[in-house]
Amino acid sequence: MRETISVKVTEPQFCVVSDLAFAQVDAWYGHTRRDLKMDLIYPEDNSKYYPCIVWICGGAWLTMDRSAHLVYLSELARSGFVVASVEYRTSNEAKYPAALTDVKAAIRYLRAHSERYRIDVDRFGVMGESAGGYLASMTALANDKEFDVGDYTEYSSKVQAACPWYPPTDISGFPYPSVEAAAASMESLFLGKNVAVNKEEAIAACPVSYVTKDAPPFMIIHGTNDNTVPFNQGELLYDILEKAGCDVKLIAIEGADHADMQFFQKELWERIITFFHEKLD
Image 1 (cartoon, rainbow, N blue to C red):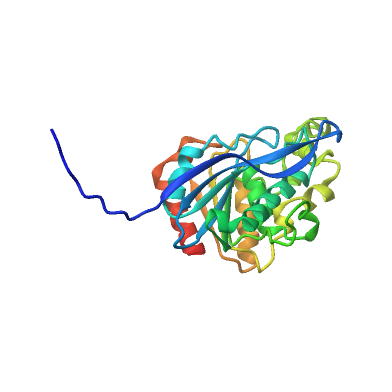
Image 2: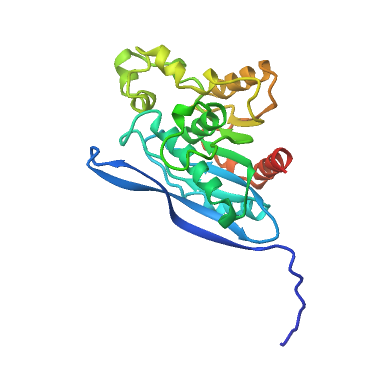
């Protein structure tokens, strides 16, 4: 069978850049340096600029894989976004606020190279899961200059919309059976101090401490049966943002546990895409 068809070009070709280095950080006890990298999906389209979504992988601040969800992120890209999945230092490499400064460095890099990757510098969103949800929230809320270190500091690391999934929002309030158990917790390893003993420092490193009326729009997604990051952590951030008069929405996924399959269904991703289009277009 032979068939001749006419195909109308209505969308650009999308390209994936893997292992794109965006910053260098100290490694091996400060004796060496290593690259921080991102995976980037962008359109080859010289006719316009696109909003950019920065994705932050979870993993209890102990581990992360920026390529784990590229199949889902590609659908987000084909819906009209540049998408960057960024690496950050984990708690065995560097303590708070290193991971946050890494994410902000990635955003500054993307703004500095916006022409190359067709990014609209005024339209950035951030999204992440669990520890990445914490970092997404902090990236959106914590705009102190101390968190912008490294290269391209002439560019802003601010974002215009945030979608954290099941984020830890107050690590000082997690229940522990003992002070010793708290010392070994993921939160204490991330902070570099026992969160049960150093509550003031712990709360000062949390999204709930950085909410102002100028916060960008938020859509928080959390499972009601989360046994890792309790649902009330997402509720707490929602309540504080709402009280401050911010644009915020909480999507509670009935019965969902931490990182459950409900988070990877088309129905939810359509809501995410709609949110970012509404807030960034």
